[in-house]
Length: 438
Image (cartoon, rainbow, N blue to C red; front, side, top):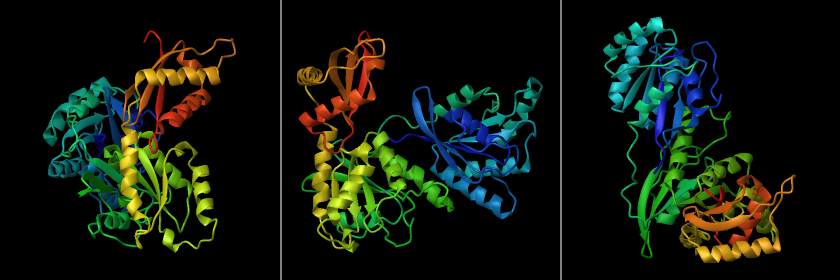
């Protein structure tokens, strides 16, 4: 299931970015003691009590009519709309302000779970002021100090209580979930319509037309699918429209819900660095991937164009060399018939299991051909046993004498040997090392 989303909202200068940085463990957001410094929402990963979630740091909310404040309020409204849980941050030193009351009214209307964090409460003499925040009607306020990290555990305990319970959508387990990701205007919506054979998704030449992820169930040759069209993701620093930044987390959540991801590239424009960043989301989540080069009909070609383009993709996507590649045209329907059979194939490999005895025979042969590495002290890696512990993605555990002796290059060597024997087209493979006694 997709990771829950936690939005941190509140008027300017109450310490939202400091709290965000504490939760994600990095100084991602700009922190400055000046109202309105955070101009756009910033996303980050959070983890608490074995719960993984996304965190949204919003620009401040205010009741003023200034363009900046209006924009920040709009961004916060979008974040509230997307969030599973909202952390409403107020400044304990200031007490309740009119802007706080306005924010509280917005949150009431959202009908979302809200946790009230009273920030800047590092001075114990201020704790008596906590009682006045009950009048906001949000519930029990939690005293915190973002700058000192005080009370954040209690805050996150309350947040985690509101996370959706484990469970997936209402689709059958045999249904293959497909998401399309890529930059704006690479033709994702057109591909969806072409695959479905009807215009179910708005198509426009204007980048970013698709704002939301849209689920479309369908059946083909006895196989059930759900296809998820996502808004395009555009490079940070070059996106100024808040809805496009808002779409990034939608796409990430779509990836989390997917079995197979179609990474769509615009054949006319070729690749840019952002294509690799977008594909990296799917790779890191362990999803099966097919690289789809769209608009291939519009490319001027000679005898070597396709081969050169494919080689360039392989050179740029070295971390995803397992992904099959298909050149299509949503407009002319060129090679579209190949996509769903490829989806079926990579989905099967994504869920493939290797018998333990066969896996261990393979490891023994691999070590015989290329002995395990040693460290500077002469200690050699010893692989005692191997087993597959999970599918989607296929995950293998090696029980060894010392996990630190398994260098990246040897891990890659073993992965290649596994792929040579069992194929695993379209899916990443994870190889973990555990100490023998573990």
